[in-house]
Image (cartoon, rainbow, N blue to C red; front, side, top):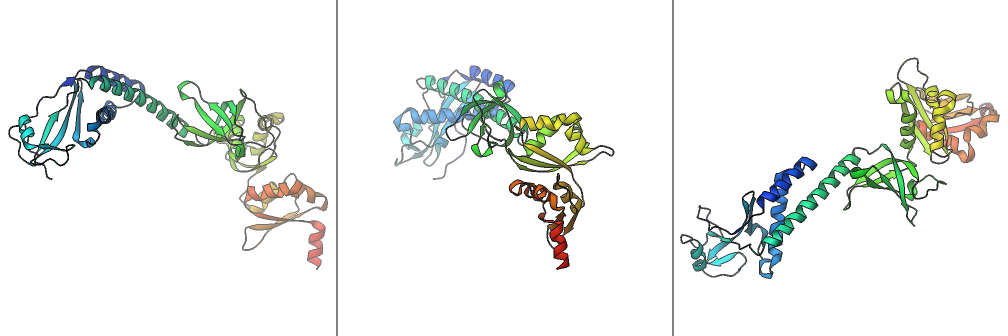
Length: 374
């Protein structure tokens, strides 16, 4: 049913004088937490509307858009909007024309009329609702700021304290301090095999991703991600932090061995020597943090053959030949270097292939000679 929108004299609604106190709190909240006053006012209006509709059984059928809340520093006013009709079918949105003309003598059938809400008894509920909304707004703002803070720390290295060990094998870690503190989850699948922790232990973790949760952001962290090695070397190696040395790629089998390819950005800098450090102090610090995980540092090269040759260290390589039309290569090594090139259970060859992106076929020199003769 269409409504006439011509201006009418609205009967004065009773008011509850909570506006000044509420707005003072909202301005303080905006200064402390950065939450706009207008945003919180809309939240309050919505909450007050819902509280009014739930206050009495006969109000529950009233649509939210028919409840008008006027909240300002002058006070709190509320009224309902209904349509004047000759026969009332829905009391939630309609009012008989005779009753409507008691409120506005000029109202006509089909036009809307505003009905003041007596909120004197509703005032206590309104005040409590407003308080709850403000408190909830503060909590949401704090959670939002913490979420934004940790979202920006994704793919970074953080330190935390082990809170508890879950029977599933997951570890919960408290990272950050004060209002910025948050819980992080170190899944069993993201833990280095063989590592054990107790409550209260300090631990370094790599931030994988951040999710919103009811009690604040939930941070997923890892100890097995290859970038954990990258971030640790960035902390230990000034040349990487300054941009003189670049980490090109990392292949890792957490808890056992990693290979890291580096290159010099600045001429005259030894990239491998910078990462190893004086007397091996820098790489030693990373190995200690990873509880003895072996780390091979090699020089990255644009030449795939040279890159593969370096990636297979510590084994000596006689030659590397690319396979035409494939991202693969044939590698010839001295007979006494075959087991070293392949590694225990194929680990060295496997990591070299992952580091370079090339499939590696390793043969001893004696077999290569036989193949040529054949």
